[in-house]
Image 1 (cartoon, rainbow, N blue to C red):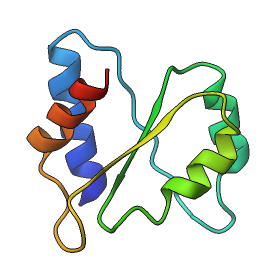
Image 2 (cartoon, one colour; image 1 turned 180 degrees about the horizontal axis):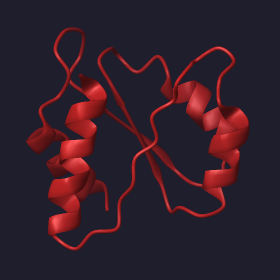
Image 3 (spheres, rainbow, N blue to C red; image 1 turned 30 degrees about the vertical axis):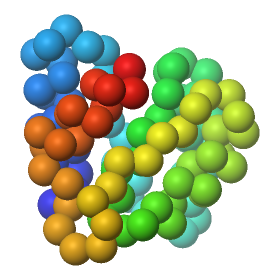
Image 4 (cartoon, one colour; image 1 turned 120 degrees about the horizontal axis):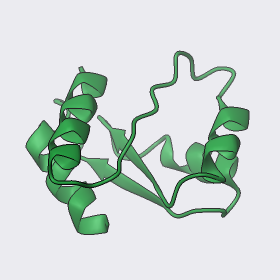
Length: 94
């Protein structure tokens, strides 16, 4: 459900003319560090959208090795953030 909300938020942001993309890992073990490192050479920032208190953000930061900033968008434990909330927070970061 989180990826659906992220994809919807990306569509909302693209409609405003912002260049955003999404990355949805298929598995977290092994963690997709190599692919994130490759993407870090082409993007300005990563935003980790989580349905927890940010447990994955450190793994993303390690994978990109300081090449770009990594920010967290979350609503805490429970339901994923709404697409509008995600879009607003990401727009604020840009």
